Amino acid sequence: MAFRDGEDIVIINRDVDEISQRVEYYYNHPQELHALADRGQASFRLVFDFDAQMEPRFKIMENVLRA
Image 1 (cartoon, rainbow, N blue to C red):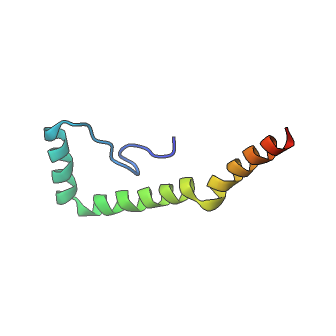
Image 2: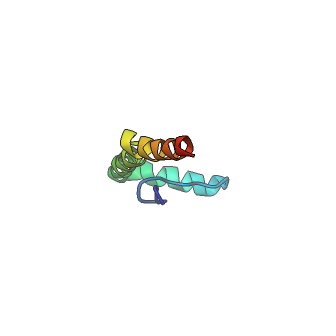
């Protein structure tokens, strides 16, 4: 999995109490929020890097063109 809940992304449900608790936690722990943001940015760059996205697409196109 590209992104891990609590490690580099925070996945929330529609529970207002849970959302409030998460917001309050990060409000009271800004260093944790910054660390989460840094890890999320790094994961995002890996997943959506140009080479990571384009290489598989080129392979598909090559296979289609060879057929």
